[in-house]
Image (tube, rainbow, N blue to C red; front, side):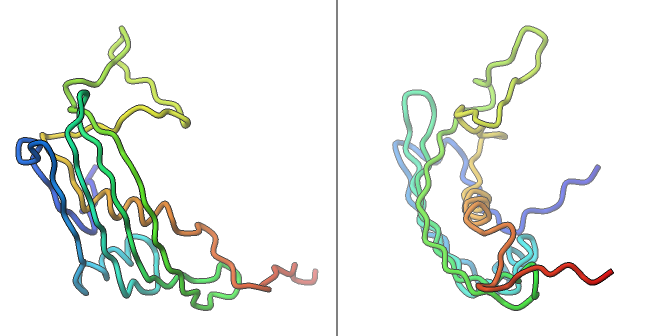
Length: 154
């Protein structure tokens, strides 16, 4: 199975973080087009992320803000729907070696699980987190105001 390429990536090695690291990501037109395709957007005219990674006792804390101007499609009319995103987020991370497994070697996950994310391969991909946070802010079923589904006549 081939893992699809990430639409935008900006990895930071864990040893480069030190006590803290700040980064501002501003995607160029080509990167915005890749992200738009990956998130099924008609357009992504602006996408920036302000990210801070701070070392903690148990790992790292990634805090940030994503700002975007995108265009989604109405699920009923397919008309363009402009959307502005300005969202803050926080994610706790630990190194892959610190992941706790059960006695049979399996990792137990739950939907409401508040456990930290795992920093794999000795790095944190800031670009991947920025795109993920944008995706979480988008309406999965955008609908134009007043658009109503009408059952076709039988």
